[in-house]
Structure formats: structure tokens, C-alpha cells
Image 1: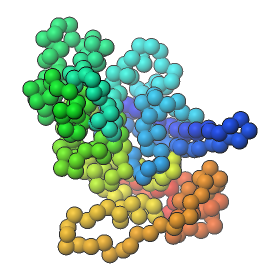
Image 2 (image 1 turned 30 degrees about the horizontal axis):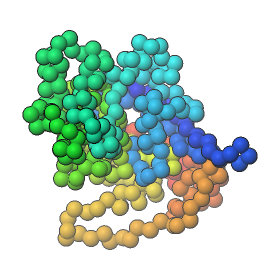
Image 3 (image 1 turned 90 degrees about the vertical axis):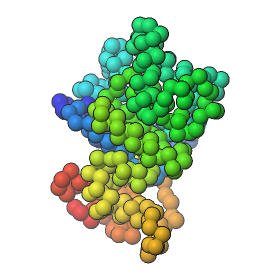
Image 4 (image 1 turned 180 degrees about the horizontal axis):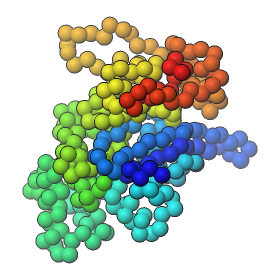
Length: 324
């Protein structure tokens, strides 16, 4: 057990089983994923990858919404699946979530006030209506909203950016240690994304809240992250400090991801056409590297042996035989 860890994830694996009794199928969504978020220093750790990489499944397991097939999730040194009732209640309060869709999160029949009052009453945070109103006002202020802008309104009367900031306010009013944000800006207008990311950075700076940020967008990851983990088909390809991974990517898959980031300068053009082989295979049948069939540097060893994460100094690690 890491005594300095707020959250410690060890060798997390999730296998979904589908099909009939006669013809069963196993889908390995997450395989042997480990990471730690320190209790001493607030941080933003990003899990990044394309659709199907396992990043959202990892987030749901970390929240306790899905039970892992194997592996351990420790919060303050305690396995979340073996917690006593009081410890579980503490975990549910101190680890909050913000999800991707700011539209389906709200019940259209209720005013948005309800989203904020429910957790206050559930966790007995206020003893009077005035105290409840004060808690809500401070939470909204922390995310750059005023009560007269949003309270008393139905979700349809608010923008996507306002709705997402309300969900951040809902998480904040419980004074969490960790917020797990799963694609929180992907369905928000591009002009509003920076505002929401800045709110997250403000909560980290002013209130010491750490974030596990889930995204497919390396540009927003670079803006907000301290460290990053790049996943592909359930496995970690590369990890380390954000600038090391994004500015000096080593894994062939991560290099392609970085090269696909749009260039904001209209005078610059992409010089290289990025193409991946179209051949797709069932990853459950792969003994070696999961990127083997799409990698320009693939060797026979890559097909037969799964590469392990190799330390390259300064917390930078890569799972590729080119560096072993």
C-alpha cells in the first residue's frame, strides 16, 4: 500500500462476457492498468485514447460503478469493494463525477436547483434553508456562475456550458478530494471549452481538488494535465509528464495521435498524411502488442510477446519493444 496515495489503482482488468451459453465471447475492455494520485499535491491525471481504448470503463470502475474482473482500487488505502458502510459513504462524498453529456444529466421536468439541493440534503450539509442557499451560492460562484443566472430555470433554458458548470458546482459543494471528469467538454461548443477547463484548474489551485480527466482530445489534455496515460484497446501504451509524452512521444501509436492534432496556424499545413492499416483483428486473440497489426515498426517479437512498460527516466514509461 502506498501511504502517500489518495487513489491507487493496481493491475485493473475488466472482461465483459457476452453471447449464449453455447457460444460465449469475452471482450477485454481494460487490461492491467495501474496508476496513483497523490494525497499530498493536487494533480490532474489524464487517461487519453480513442473510442474503445478502455478509458471510460476505467473511470467507471474507479468510481465503483462497475466491479473489475481483477485488480484493486484503493482509496486512502482501503479497497473500495471491501469498505464498511461509513467508509463507503465517505468515498461517495469525497470522490465525485462529472460526465460527458450536459443534456441527459438533467431531468427536463425539474428545475436545475434540484441537482444542487439533493446532495446537500443527502449528506446533511445544511441545517437551515438559508445555510443551504449560501452553500449553493458559493458553489456556483466557484465555477463562475451567479444564482440569478441559473436558479429557478429548467435545463432547456441553459446552454451546454452552463449545465456542465452546474455539474461541476454540484461536485464542488461536497468538497471532494477527487473529481473524475469523463469527457466533460466534448459536447460543449469549442468557444466554451477553455472556460470549463479553467474552472477545473481553479478548483485544483484554490481548493486542492485533484482530477482524473478522461478525454480523446490531446489538445485539451495538454492544456489541463500534469501527467497523462495513453491507452489503446484497454492497455497502457505510454505514460508520463504531459510535456514529455505530447512533445516527445515514443510509442508509434502515440506518435500518430500527436501528429493528428490540428495545427491552429492557418499558414502551416500538415506535411505528412497519416494513414493506419485498415486491417482489424480481435484483440483477445493477440498474444503480443495490441498495436502490432497497425504498426509500421512491427517485428515478429511484437506478435509473440506483450511489451512491458519500460522506465525511460523522469516518470516517462513506454510499452514498446523498440525501447527494451
